[in-house]
Every structure is written in structure tokens, then in C-alpha cells.
Image (tube, rainbow, N blue to C red; front, side):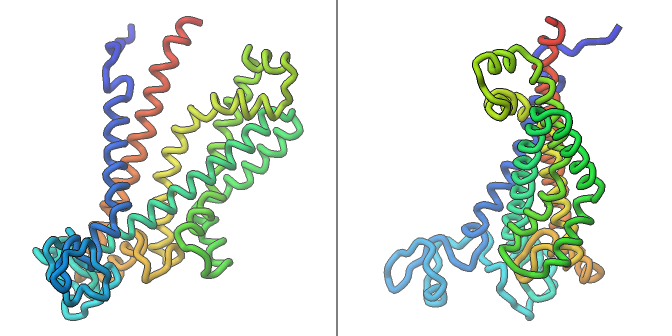
Length: 321
């Protein structure tokens, strides 16, 4: 006899896991979004020519009396060769790189680009997967077969391998973080396609779809208005896993020198710096690696929490049937 978890158990129904994942991602997202304010060469409050100034422009910082400095008072691109490869200490909490740039500042600014690339990749993959999955589920066997074979063909190429091929062939250009995210998303949609397709096909035989057909609605209206909303909810679980994977792929591309190009920082670029100078400076690889690990962990906890919540929600319905 199988033991049943108590009703409302936060472990069994995924609330604790979901909260942990959401908390990690919220913290990382807030730090990345606030990077221009938290980590810059401009103080939060200063006195310039006898007047108080909130975040004074860079041209007057040199003659300003700093009253409230920024938490990380270093521009991410500021080079100071005299302080190259300093270990973590009071002046630079996470140390400096081979050019004397502050690692904490570059880590925060790099998070903006790495997380942006992951968000673009996930949004694009979800859009493509939802559109094609809905089409495969409502347009009949011929369209379903063609779209399913196309998804299999794309899925045969791992996202990292496909992104390396496209980025290497296309050369530099465009908005780096967005471009990297688009390339990753173009190879990441087949998994979401399969989830949406299966859910649309399941719901297409429901009373909801039958009522929509009886009212004269066409296939696309039925699919987009009545079936897709039900299909997207379960697809959020693989989408969360995909988001963590997209950040990991971006880090891999940056590590190989094919992602977001220097001097713009990204977690992948920082990991590459750690590889080049890691023998002399252990902190260069540790902190960006930890940031990538926490991001992937956060998305995986979020996905697992969503899966448990959806399972807990569906169990009463299954028992009722």
C-alpha cells in the first residue's frame, strides 16, 4: 500500500520547491537589472560645486565630493593595470581580472546580458513551439507529419552545436545578447512543440472543442482561443528547464569565444577569462561559474515545483474520473 503525502504538504505539492526556485531567480534578476545603478563609476549622491547631485554624470565625477558611493563603485570596463589580478579584498570584494577591471561589477553587468540572452531564447522557442504545435494538432494528419518531421530534424542538432555553426558562419553584427538568444531559440523549440502538440491533440476531443465547432468556429480559432491556453500551462515546465539550458548554452558559447563579444561582459566571457588566467587567479572562474550554477538551479527548482503543483492539481480530477 502506497503512503500518501498529507494534503497541503509544501514538499509534496511543490510549493517549497517553487518558492525556492522563484526566490533564487528573483534575486539574480534584480541584481542584474539594477547593475547600472549598483555597479558603476557614478556615486549615488555627491556634492558638485556646492550642490547636491543624485548620480552625477561621469564628466563631473572627478570634481565631486562623494557622499553616498555606489555599492560597487567601479565601471565594468575601467582598466587599472596597477591593480591587475588582485584577489578578493576590501576594495574589490570579488577581485580584479588581468586588466585590473572589477570582477563584481563585470559579474553584475554580465548577468544582464546572459539572462537577456536566455530570456530571448526561451520566448522565441515558446512562440515557435506553441504556433507549430497548435498547427500540428488541428490541421490534420498530413500537416502533423510534416511538422513533426521538421521538429525531429531540428532536434537532431544540439542547441550548442547549432548555435556554434550559425554564429561562426554569420560573423559579428547586431545586438550581441539578442542575437545569441535568437540563435539558441531557433534550436530549442522542438521540445516545447511536442508538449503543445500533445496537449492540443488531447483537448481537441474534449467537450470544449466540440462546443466551439458547433458554434461555427474554424480550426485556427478553436486552436488559438480554446485549446492553446490549456496546452501552454503544462508547457511551462519544459520551458523553465529550457531557460536554464539557454543560459548554460550562452555560457558555453562565451567560453568558446562565440557568444557575446568582449569587451561587453557576460558570464561566458568571464568563464573564458578564468580559463586563461585561472592558474594565477582562482576567483576569475569561481564567481561566474557560481552565478551560472545558481541560475540553472533556480530554473530547475522552478520547473520541478511547477510540475509538482500541476500533478497535485490534476490528481483530484483523475480520481474523480
